[in-house]
Amino acid sequence: MLRAMIRMRPWLLALLLALVPVSEALADCTDPAGPGVNWRRCVFDRLEFKNADLTGAELRDASFPLTDLREADMTKAHLADADLATADLRRARLFGADLRGADLTGAKLEGADLTGADLTGATWTDGKRVCAEGSIGRCN
Image 1 (tube, rainbow, N blue to C red):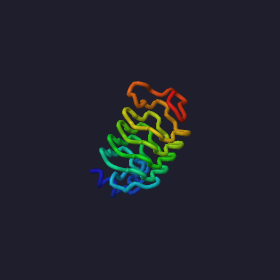
Image 2 (image 1 turned 30 degrees about the vertical axis):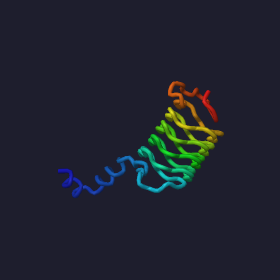
Image 3 (image 1 turned 120 degrees about the horizontal axis):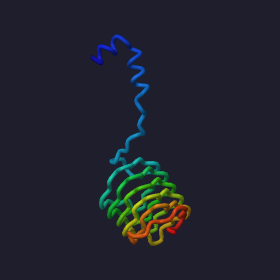
Image 4 (image 1 turned 90 degrees about the vertical axis):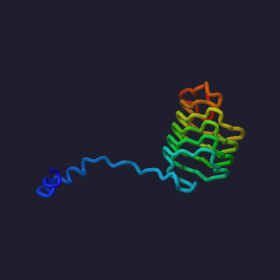
């Protein structure tokens, strides 16, 4: 029925296409680590991204349990709501990163650069404390 209507009224197809929302680019979880990579909603369990350059990466809602991110450059990365529980972030460069609502339970942050990182609503490494609104560079 719909096909017949579209054949008879080509403007109907144009109208239907105009009404369909344009979705954001889908993440490709198999893409290699690199600046600006889109790993939104991807799961990386027990992988190694030591020294990876993830500058400006889209990592929102991604999960990194037991993942080695030591010395990774995650400058200005979008990590809002990311699961970083138990991730190894020692000496990671998280300068200006968006970590709002991220789970940092059990994460190793020794030597990590959190300068300018937004930690608002993030669950801190102890798994109990939630960082207050305006926690920039440290969990308040």
